[in-house]
Image (cartoon, rainbow, N blue to C red; front, top):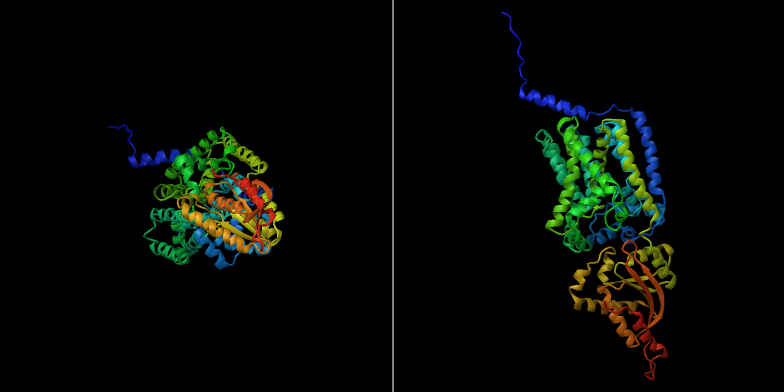
Length: 574
């Protein structure tokens, strides 16, 4: 008797594999391009990246953070370490900047070119990681995104460590994943080297460590390579140990991010995350940058680009041969940002959009490039890439055309021009850093004093709220500073006051006003009014002279009536 074959259902596991294969085909990688063609395109992109980062590199003033970095780096290694005790940064970038200054000088262009060099190197590095992990085509997309990213161009033109940080963090990420995937002593040494460099570049790199631990624990080879992971962790801990005591001092300095607290209370965490999303996808953002100039229409493209990254992470992470790599990239993108947000909730705000998130910017570029490369047709890939490029170019045009840093150079030039060599300059409210930097460049030696004096130990930070909480101590500090200025002002008794009309400066201004009424101090001239770059705070420069003692008859000099003029010139209490 003949039998009729009946359809036999496939086992459930086989059906899952079949479904996975179908899903994978929907996001399968397009045909790759030859290595030679990829490296030729990389050469063009490196030239483009260098041109974008060099264009107008010296046109903007060195604002307070940049000037502070130069002043720190100008000292000896021991001086650098000592100054950083009140900062939030380790010393690697400052050591490198110290050597760079000796080779190329201290002009804005020379100093910023170090950041530009790291920025161009980051384009090459992200290309190579994408080429090794995915394909040459993906590598080209990743290098393009990195080359034209406005936030990267911005930091390539700042005397700060925010192009070095993503470069070494990318190396730490790459070699950690290499240990997880293939093992080997070379990958382990690379992970040790780049992780240590990251930790010595910025304290934000501490948020990288849990992401690395997550990769190790979920690698599937953790037990097999336990000794390797243990050796990597122990080596990094030993190499970082010399800096650990200073890190603890920095963590005890709760005023380091005091300027961020009002923004955190006003905007909250969601706004901070949204700003990071905008900054990554399309344009310049973050605090004191050009995020306010970004058109509202860009929000739609930002959402679409992040949706693309989410889809490619979800689908390739579940179905592709590259799934483990994609999930590890997602961990490196999400975990550090999540930890920065959590720390800001539990301890004190430290999440600065457009700054701390640069640590994970390479992971974003790699995922974005993979998403573009896995789109189905060349037309769609071209359209998405063109939209991102157009938006980036739009923001770069704004960035090049505006100068939010204008003000500090004009202010410093006015002070240097008005002051005699060696004359005392009394600076308040973070006005000192730029004045000191440009005075050094001019070659004119000045005696610069800060109010409060502790601000002179860290020219980029002052916790006004903590100072105003102790009004009696602030008035005593004003008395001491005035006495310091009097002793340092020399035989002619002249000094320049560079001040803002902030509440924290009122005790000093009241002390000077009282001395004017007593004819102990005289007004010489008003040098002018200026503004601090980026923040726009009005700054006033006034010229004074301490009065000579009365003559033998007890009569004060005739010009003592200028004390009333001084009283009128000084700002009134707010």
